[in-house]
Image (cartoon, rainbow, N blue to C red; front, top):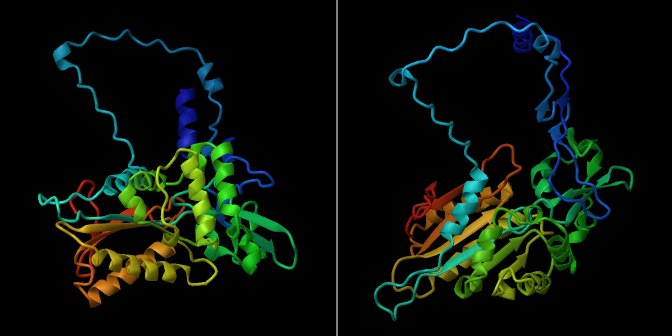
Length: 369
C-alpha cells in the first residue's frame, strides 16, 4: 500500500522533492578562450526539461513484504504472444543525412556512349550545414553600452539572430542587453581564419562536433571528379575565394577529399545585408549554366542545402517564383532543396523537389532524375 501511495502522490502532482534540471548544453568541445553557451530559451519561460529526480521510494520498499501466491502454470496455447517493440521515433535530421548522400550520384548516360551524361551539381552553405556546432568560428555579440563580448557558435546564431536585442535568454544572459556591431561582430569571417579554424577542428575536436549534416554529401561530391567541378559554396563568410579554397586544400591534404572545388565556385556573400537574396540570385545563375550544358538523356540535377531557415525559405520562394513565370526555363534540370537546421524550434529538416510549374513535392529517396 505504501508503494501505491507513493506512486499516486507522484501521478497527482502532489509536493515532492523533485529537482528539475534546466540546463541545455551544447555538445561542442571546449575552444580556447570560449565556453559554449548553456541555454537557448525565451526569457521568462522554463528551459527544456532534461531529467527529473522522483521522491525516494525507500520507505515504501522497506515495508514488510506481502506474500504473493506462486504463479500457476499456463498452457502454452493460452500464453499471450510477445508484443513487438515500439518502433524508434523518427530522426528527421538523421534521415536527411542519408537522403543527401543518396541523392548525390554521378549522372548516367543513355545507351549512346557518345551522348553527354547528366551532371550532378551541389550547392551548399558551410557553417551549421557542412560543419557542425562545434566548429571554432564564432560571431561576437557586444553588451550594449560596453565592451563585454558574447561569442556565439554559427549554428546557434542561425536560431537566435532575430532575438538579438529582445527579451530572450541565451548563454546565461538576456539578449535584450546585447547587439551586433557590424564587421566587429563578424571579425572571424575574414582573412585566413577559415582554414585555421578548420585545421583546429580536425586536429582537436571529435568528428561529431565539427562535421555537420551535409558533411557526408560534401565528401561524396569532392571524391567524384565531375561533381567536384560542379560543387558550389554559398556562405555568409566574407573570405575571398582563395581563402576558402585554402580550407579545402587542407581537407585534401588530410585525406578527407580527393578533388578540389573550383575557386570561382566559392562565394562569400556575407556583409551585404542581402545574404539570402544573393544566394538565390547565384543559384539561379548556376541552374542556367546546367540548363545550357549538353545532355544526351535524362536530366541534370542540382541540390542546395542550408541550415538557416531564412536562406532556405528565400531560395525556395525565389526559384518557384521564376518557374511560375517561366515554366520551361529549367526543363533539363531537376532541382532539390534541403533544409538541414537541427536547432530550429519552428521548422523540421526537409527535402523538396521543385516541379517545372513552380509547385513543390517531397523528395523520395532513390527516385529517378
